[in-house]
Image (cartoon, rainbow, N blue to C red; front, side):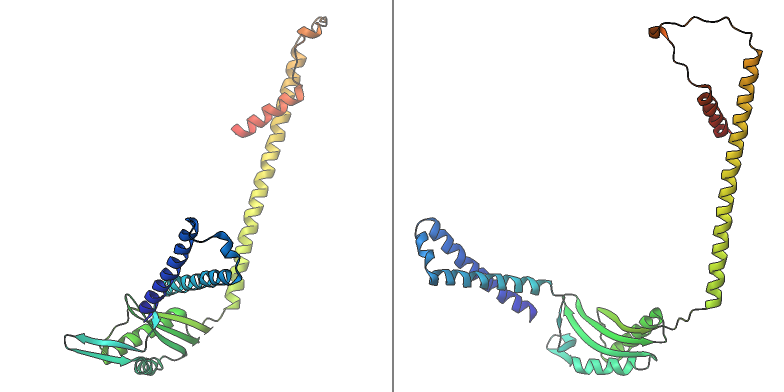
Length: 258
């Protein structure tokens, strides 16, 4: 039915679009004067046709993208000269009867949707005191067994929508708090280790810096006293880096190499 309705809507929208195109072509070649469109009746007709086209196009697109349609019956046997159809009400009744054996599962809605690949069963359920995996496996097993042995039929897919959930899971507060404390202590120990490494690097850097400074001072004392040097002109002066900066650089390089 959905396919037939989509075909009707597509045909109607094509006819309306053709009418608008004809009006546009006739107007472009001078068959209709532009002043004629100033008439309120003509404007109303053009506007009504345009709205009709938009509505038909929107409905057509919606029908094309709708996944399947609700069924009233399904064909469980189809052979040459014979067929067997079962109403959706009968199938729903049997599915409910089979699935009521699953404790903790209440069925809110059951629907059968047809598409190009077969029939999909959609179940809306409420789950109490059960895990999701356990519920899913139990429902699929009961439904497939019921359909196979009662109607000799298999659904192309079974979609389970859990509307309400009261899980079996109960938190073990003592165990969780112990795990939290364990991870917290491990993190604190790691932070303390990082701080100790940073402090050791700083102490090593300071010791290396003092050693280099002491060495430079010893070399300076060992050198003979030099004669006074006349100041060179500004254009020939050589820029000398401060001794403190050289010491800092050499100490940093020594720490990195270590």
